[in-house]
Length: 628
Picture 1 (tube, helix red, strand yellow):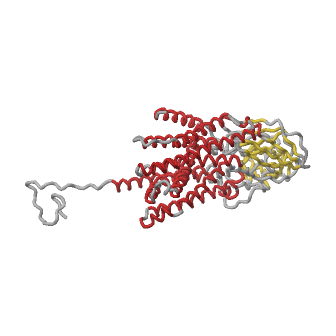
Picture 2 (cartoon, helix red, strand yellow):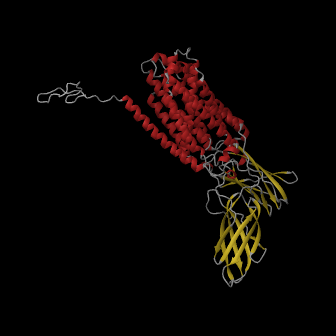
Picture 3 (cartoon, one colour):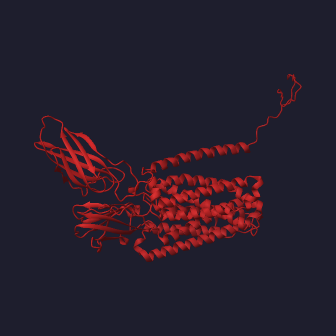
């Protein structure tokens, strides 16, 4: 195949990958439960006719199961499930509705499990509700990572890292004399090609296992297309890196073309890996591009360090001297610096979509794994900085080349990549119970028409609460006595907006005194709700008002450890600031480098002509007409 035909094929493959990858719309990491109806811990006056599970993305209905455990321990498997508010092609949020047979008084526990259609990730959870009885909420739950999914992701990440590392270190070896760098360069490429083939085989085996476990109905068209394109990209990169080049004069140019083709294929495979996984809460092209940049930069750093460690171990067999190994290590400084900056900037931005608060990091498995990954990556970065300093200090260059720091850095980065694979299979720390957008309401006192209205709820937690409302007439004499008060609670959807009226029922309050009324309300969940208050008066039109009320945390929610203030916006803006600082630093470094390389201008002395005044001082004259 000629070079032109190869480049055309690569363009078609990567173009298709970009269309499929960037065409995906916002979704979230796997399908986890955003909310339910009845809510967890809710106490209902009447038994529900249906159970609704609202997931963050499209799920496979055939693989969804809902089981209700009755007060006597009998388990009731619900049937007739339906899927609403979902667009399979766009991976939009979806709602599963299950009809419920008549239920009696008591506490009920609901267990559910489903399958995400974008990456075949299994999610499970439980919640509880009561019918005319109090019930303890089950609290937030996390789904354990699937072993097969984890192995498949580790294999693909290892293959991508090996391929990128072979390309980068191969370019550094290309700076050595041709006869010296040819053998280690070809050896690294062969090892990367073999690992890419193994990664493709492992991914295929995992897909076959998923086919047996979940059936063909779980494989959507979009998933199959993205998965197939990624496998082709991995095999194409393995073919390009694995083929041999002769000793012809154009072999170096052919090797560079192969490395360019392999880099393009590996970048496309990385983009497709991101699209098969998750897109974050914001989603869209920005999320996909940022995630791909983060993945490629991290794997490039890890794969290159692993390749450098292997070169250090096998330098004698590959015909490399200690000095040549040091030269290659010193050349890696620029790629490593760029990778670390990209990882830091993109990582902070991506964290704004998977972590909602400080407590979310500390109280969830996902947050703790993320914290461990960041801490280990920072430690590896310090080791890399020490190694770089040693390599650029003449007295310790030999010790740095022979020391174990590069190997330690490689092992640390492999662990970081393993933790990244674990995060890719986990449930992000974005549960609404772990973030408090607003402080819980205490009391609402406002004038409404010619009335002064005061509202308070106790204990102001999800489930049953008592509303106390005082209504005072500000006019004398009063136009008409208050004959009744009714209240309606309407849930506010996530992200704000108008409250929903589905399932909302007006509750008539009972008179406590002439001006105070009491009503038993059921609050759906923590966070903001709208409470519609209607005051009925004799001979006068009703007075309507709407109170935006913030419900406090459930008694089953974990206690606040540090803070539940939202941090998403802070992290996103921090990434922007860090990107600007990194760009300014790069500009300053380039200017300093050019200043060192560009020779200083030297003025050539002009020959003295007739009529020029003679120097008055016999000092050493450096230029015509000037003296020192």
